[in-house]
Amino acid sequence: MILLLFGFILLFITILQAYIPRFLKPTIVFGVNVPEQHEKDKEILQLKNRYTAVVLFGGLVIFAGYIAWALLQNPQEEVLALVSVGIQIGVLFLSVAYYFIMHTKMKKLKEKRRWFSDKNEVKVVDLGFQEKLQLLPRILFIIPMIVSIGLIFYTLIKYPQMPDMIPTHWGPTGEADAFSEKSYLTVISLPLILLIMQVMFLFTSEGIKMSGTSISPQRKKTSVKQQLAFRKYSSWLSFVMSVGVTLLMGYLHLQTIHPEITSSLVMIALPIGFLVLAFASVAIFTVKVGQGGSRLKVGEEEVVAGNPHSTSVDDDRFWKGGIFYINKDDPSVFVEKRFGVGWSVNFARPLAWLFILGPIVLIIGISFLL
Image (cartoon, rainbow, N blue to C red; front, side):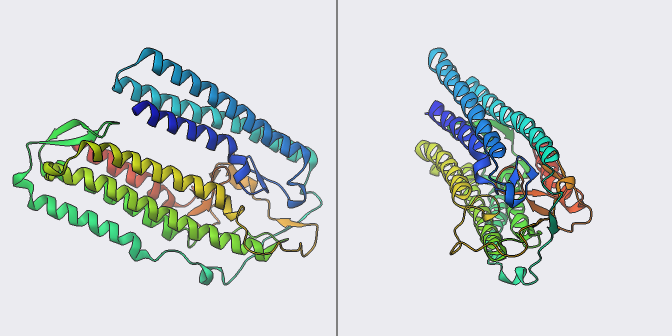
């Protein structure tokens, strides 16, 4: 069962990473901005195909070797889990390393072809964009937070009846494999971490309301609709993940207070169910929505309008390596990723650093004090 679980995760990562270029905006190729008139050039399509072939082949070779090793060696669960995580990181490293190779090739190709030399760079702004947004209401993200706060108070009430040793970590089978002595901090550590994660989901949903838009000057109406849909579905994805994490961690915590509700079947099924929910949500979002809503059909194909020599503003100078966005003149905290589907942050904004480092520091602090 554990091998099947880790094998599925590895295969999912391999396929998703290999086909990422096909789910992004056609005008963003390996983190490089390309005019719409050149998004289907032969050289660009060749680079995308080569990336997919190399990452997919390399990942499948690693996957086959991993399965063969696990079946022949029959390692212990702890060893299998450790090696599995290491291999998953290795596949991600492979894809990221090859991405930077392709990013460099695209930059050189762009400089050689001088695609923007004869183009009028245009920044299109929809003044009514914020009013058109259909994100989930804030209260839906606050409800899981109220659940976590309720768990904290309930735990403190039940503190005298709780066991002297509190589980603080669960293995791949769902069984507790690490414990700490009972204290007021250890008994509420799990709902505290859960609350931090829920705040992150809420902050993400709220942050994308104020994120800047990238509207095509050639297909304004279609672009606006896709941008609106992308934000709506991003909000839904954050909510689904928040609910999933709440159910998983909430049950793990409750069974430390009420051991009688512990079930080996539930302890196995719940983490697997959460992983299935998470992977299915990400896969659907990636394949059906795409980056910036580029894969969504939002009506009849719009006729290209405006000056054929107009193109979106080339903002490559703000993207370091096509991954890290640094623009002190942009008030947005969240920005659309250039490689990968979802959101990144504007590293020039102090609030972005707070969003990244704040939860890490708090979680590490809680773990250190256990």
